[in-house]
Image 1 (tube, one colour):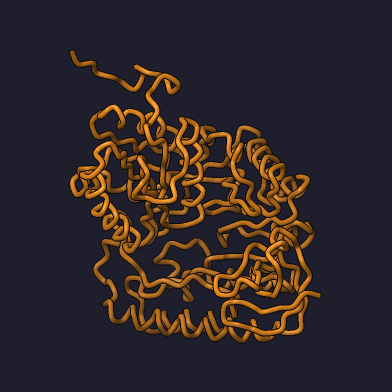
Image 2 (spheres, rainbow, N blue to C red):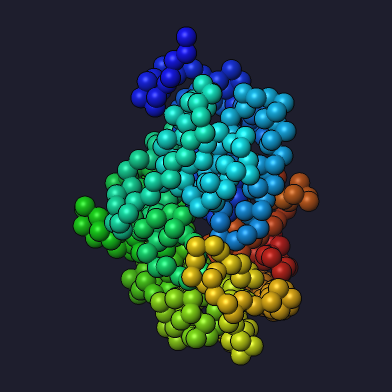
Length: 461
């Protein structure tokens, strides 16, 4: 006699535990995806699973995917192809696809990878334990793709995080999900839904838990992180006020945030960076393009001039503050003049760092359907030229730091030389110095002795 099990037929405590009780989460994409993967791990551990060091040996495998560009999607489909052999060798392996690509392409994933047990979108992470346990009972393929339909929805279905887990020196803390900006190149509003903030009390409780386990640095995360605090039941909470509140948590010595949106970057945030000792002198602010005509086609809600005003105010108020950015070349219709405008903006702003990309058409976005796509060879030439320019500027900036003193949180040994340790300065410069591993986790004063393209070499003071 067969029995049909529904999602309500067994409670989590009654459902069967996996025999091997191990899981592996493969992550592509941004810091928000990394943080989502940590939530997934917490959910799996709540039903008795433990992490595996090998994807090939885990009984439960989750792929947390990204759709911002085509390359991570290609990697995910390639791995799904490899996992077909794992599934044939070990049929009891549970395979789930999560994240932004799952939100967009669930039907295609099922067609191309029928060995996948379930697909779960960015708004349904809390359902992963049930989906995993139903897959262990050989339930049929399932999909969960619910997203909030309005902005301002309350984020309340997160697990109690960082309890009983290995202490982390640095940790991400999501404060806001989704986006209301709808840039013409970006799929995030579709994959992550409308903008919504976590209650202040929940954020502070998480930060306290982190501090209690030894975390010294937190990075506040949001798609447009400085838009935090709108439409909340507790009333509007400006992002600058949240920075002050987090800074009062005992044990938290460093606070960073990413990524702010230029239009919402107001003087109160600049003043908070200047006045709160725990907030690091670092701003990552995406420019994307160096001409107003291109910014308008991208539906970026600021101009080159207003962006320049923000940079000027930051550098005047906080001379030691580093500024990094995101840049896209080869956006549909990009003229040579517009592209040269981006190069000139890079020369003028002299960013301390930049994430640079050739435009990748995204299905479901307005720009992905436009006819005036730029030829691949033109995009390749432009991105290579931009990278060369920016790398030269970073090398010049870092060389100019020689002889200056920095405060560094030492995080790890270097990969190439185990006699060297490394960490980031307040202004997010990667600094390497000689030292034993017992210095890891401590803040040190150092003096820069050599400038590199990607950071500095220093000595202890």
